[in-house]
Length: 318
Image 1 (cartoon, rainbow, N blue to C red):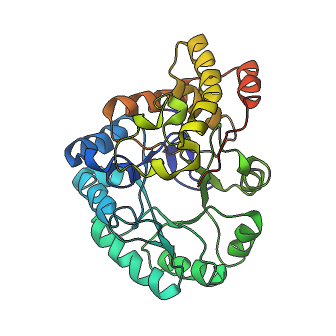
Image 2: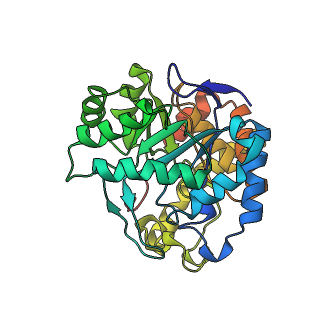
């Protein structure tokens, strides 16, 4: 796989990463298969998918435990391992709550390292800014993890430009993780241009629209029982039907290239900037291979213009 860097001066990574959330949390809870997920994580490294992303809240905790076990032994040094802190959840319950207090962050990094079976993470991210805690205080606690050698770099998630600037005044920001896909383009207006200009990596989560852009869901009935997408506005039946126009547009270009819709959707995301590193999630070996192959799909200027012209989605993100 072709590579880029995790920020202007960060480590080399494959341009497509792997989000691990769905392996233990949120999507299809009855379909958890740790053995297959372990195979997927290790196969990802063989494909050059080296950026592996998790978080303490996924499960909670079970996702870090799974990732840590999968990366045990010789696999750890091949991965650029990222985790997150700042959201707190109860098993089987949503929504989660914010916790950006410095004492929580200081305690959480040690707990994450224990679950991950490593002495450091390559990227430690503030999952959400806690509105009750000044970002400078939360960010300062993450910076302490760098000073202590527990994290190589630190990043933010779901922030605006002003919040990035406030964090930068305390410690360098290596990455920003936010949703970006053909049906979620908000960051293209301000956040992505700013991170690009600053040499900050941008890590799009849900670059396949939580699986929708791959053409897997024509009806709400296609979602597994207990899947949290049942509660999202864009996955309600009326919105799903209206949003099929977006899927159809992606599929037209996929047919043109002999590619999958998922590969086209990911190639569009990759085309948004030199430091854009999408982290599609999957726990299926076939989809892992398909997603990795998107790094080799080169869309033409006409393809990109056609994709840019697709309609906005019906329904909000949450």
